[in-house]
Length: 357
Image (cartoon, rainbow, N blue to C red; front, top):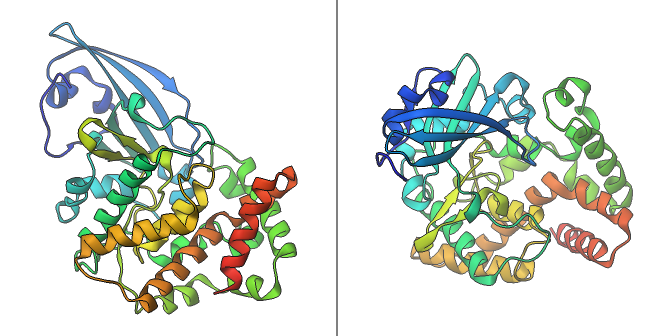
């Protein structure tokens, strides 16, 4: 990038500074002009994105991305109790700077102002995974599993994970689960989303799922999130990215990986990230789910420098599978309407895993 190198993102006092040529000079060097244009994304949270085309006084150009989030109008923030903006809080917290020893930091500057969060990022479009429902390469999957294992190992049972704004396990479990789907998907929350139809889909998907599942699995999924989280009390906990879909990562030259969208940043068993990875990336996995789990286990044990007993690992897998199901089994039930063997196989895998827990 043709400007100053920043060890940490610059914090501005107001959102407008993130598009102000003079203020941006502190981040990228002297700027002559800034042109803003809307950027369409596929996210569900309600955040908006803009492309910023900068003309530098050197004569060169630079493209950045600005993400804006109004916390009061963002259903994820609303439902998860995020009143300060977790992504910005992460960038501002020195105790969590180790995150950027694991991942390349795509953020250049940020601001929090009256319930609105602005995040200025590098434009890494050319390094993102293609938006197709096809398996990624094994080497690319290895890179993603390796950085997740590195993140988890870096903060394994860390005493620094005491910030009240980090999502606790029970919040993660209740975010999109069937109890929320039946009782809490309402118009107020729908208005907070850029995709209000999502809530109707969740409700219908959970109704379909609960009607199809064995009674023992229904009982498991309908347990209160607090009660489930209490059963994890004896498991190691670590820092969680919270949204490990391949679209939130960029593979950079030199083998580094950048990570975006830390809105669900939280604390819990490391396999919460793994379970979500398996659930949300079902069509993108380079290997079978069993092979992905085994690969992740080996990478995590290498990071920890110790062997996880089979008993502990099975408990971690159970936590991850349950969390993945609570987050996305409604979508897998809806996919059954397509009647494709792929959708049926995916549904059957999750049901078998849950029935064995």
